[in-house]
Amino acid sequence: MTVQKAGVFHKSLLAAAVLFVPSAALAEQHVDELKHSLRLEYQYGSFGAIDTPGGLVDLGETTSHAFLLSGTYAVNERWTLFGSIPYVRKRHKGANAHILAEFVNFTPPDRRIVDDGGYHGGFQDLYVGAQYLAVDGPVSVSTYAAYGSPLSDYPVYGNAIIGKRLWEMPLGVNIEFTPHFSDWSFHADISYVISEKLLGVDLNYWLLEASARYYVTRRFAPRVFLTQRIAPNALDLADIPGDWDNAPGYHHDRILKHGYLNAGIGFDYIISDRYSISATYFEMIEQDVVANLDLAYTVGLTYRF
Image (cartoon, rainbow, N blue to C red):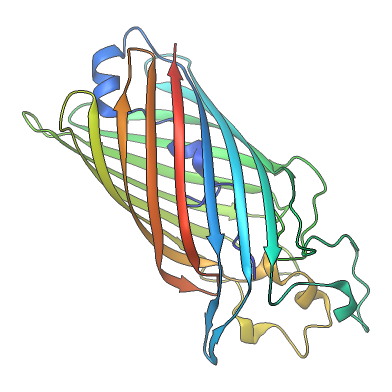
């Protein structure tokens, strides 16, 4: 079973909806001068076994490397446009490799194999959207909407696939709270993602994020965070009929729940007026029909202009 949308692990593919939010200190110092941004982020993930009702199932090792380019453009004081495009490479080695020889009664629509022990990849899905700053102050509230669409006809069967190849429409709200005379800053992001249906399965899901940041100095801020993905109407393993030699079996990586709860730590550091860097490390603490995340981290560079 592959992890859905490997382009962005801590927030799935909603990076476009969260990366445009600048660090509070940088925004406070330069909001009048620097309104736009470009960001390049590297993301690494290693995935292993899956916890099933019948016990732990070895899935071998799937390794993912992703480069995410994202950016924002401030139209005015209230409206911001944003977008992101990830390039992903993945490799699967070991147990549970997906091969097309498993199908006898069902004819796979795509015979490309990605679980051959080598890296496969390409550009994943392009996301574009808009954010509106509804409330500004110690508590700021922004709403956003985005649309994501696959950039190519990439394979969708195998542990090493780079995505689900379905269009999605995230709708969400972003809340920031920076108390007066405090070095703390708190953030919450709630989004409901409307997804293209497949085989009649409702694949809409929730993405939730909460974080707390503490400014040790005006430039350096460690943080802790939780992220969660909930797909209430997607399928469980038991919902795939028979011996999986059928359409749901072929498309299982696109229609299963792929739910998780991740916890992590990170930091933001402002190098200069225009440049800042960030890094995170996180682990999966709960999984719901998804391969366990053994190791994941990100590093990113943001340029503001």
